[in-house]
Length: 410
Image 1: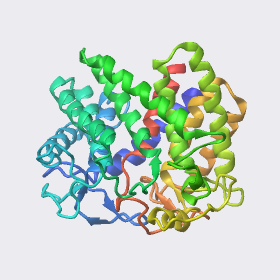
Image 2 (image 1 turned 90 degrees about the vertical axis):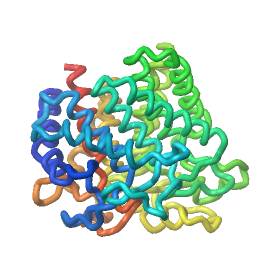
Image 3 (image 1 turned 120 degrees about the vertical axis):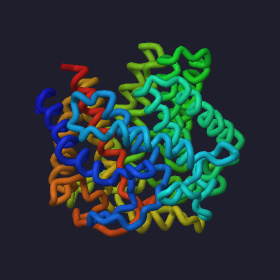
Image 4 (image 1 turned 45 degrees about the horizontal axis):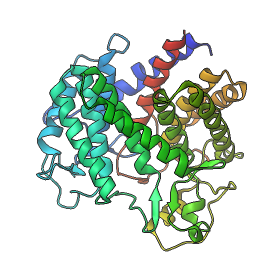
């Protein structure tokens, strides 16, 4: 497809499938969105609200509204965004300034879902920051920045939790600098928009996180998800496994952070990232059924290595061949992004292959949204893979970014 065809294709996907679907899940009474939905049936199984999903939904709503002339919105999205932000400000912030993991429909804190996931804090900041950009409200930006500063301090002091995937003792998780570089870089954009005197400090943190990922977690042909503190643990399953989706998502985060480096460094790093994309899709691709495995070994195929009796190991072994929505939507955007930037024909072929698989396998038969969790062979699966939610974020975010990308090169 040419750039105009790509733009029209993804715009139509959002306007006819994803936007209508999520319009039916907005809670106009209290604010936020209902996302505890059965994967293989359009059934709300709980009205509890995970802040991961609420922050992500606020990001999506804000980005749709920023360019509302492009999208078919029902006129209620501005109200939905305002109610979601108000709901989050009122109910998600704990007395210590941290963000609660989940609340009931009306915002009541759930006793078992309190201060146990730094990721809830991160997605809260992403959502509030995007809403600040849309509304041009510097006070909302300052609030988001204050939560970000707490996140930064807690990570530096190692006083945080990371449910649903606790970081095993003796390992450093790539997921932490990965989510934080995205949060920090988006916050930096707002700092420029609002002429924040702390803008340069935020920018320096982006650069520091970039170096942490590229120098500590990128090894040979992969990004190491769990980096052991001691070399004798490099025979473990945790060290050996690859998460293709995380790798590809992180590579577009790193691409955006390249703006903070000199041109010569950008060229060398871009070349390295292209090589890493190709290695990742080649080793992660299922040659029998197509699509990307959830996890693979560093040599390909089923993950292997010494186990240390950590529950994340069981998740890897139990779900390694599952086909999930989010790695594939991340692959669509990342591969197309680098293909366009480099004019690389091999990446262009990979984009076409991934696109064909995605739109043959994932769309729901009723034409609304995707059935997000599939078996290796592509059949719908009823299970929880992280939070017990249908995610309102990855697919729509990547479609929005693809449209922005191709508009920029037409």
